[in-house]
Image (cartoon, rainbow, N blue to C red; front, side, top):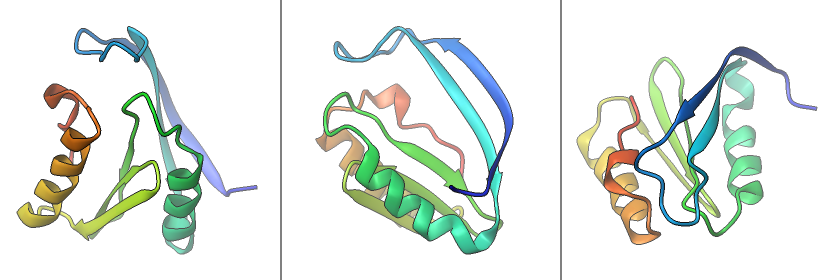
Length: 104
């Protein structure tokens, strides 16, 4: 079991959903101990469905993590190169441009 604490659950309507994505999503905001950020990213990369254009993003105080099926991007928060590399990968697997807007 992962030591996560859910801080917020939000349901949103999505007007930019890809054809294989549902029009309503559930977003989970969470906190976890720093020791778990890498193992959590590895677990998520292995658990995300390879189709559907899904990813997970979260930040520590110093780093941004963007996790796709089988691929993890980890870069210093605010670093343009890391963000662009993750966005490029997202585009390559069919994630619509408006969904590549995570905060880091």
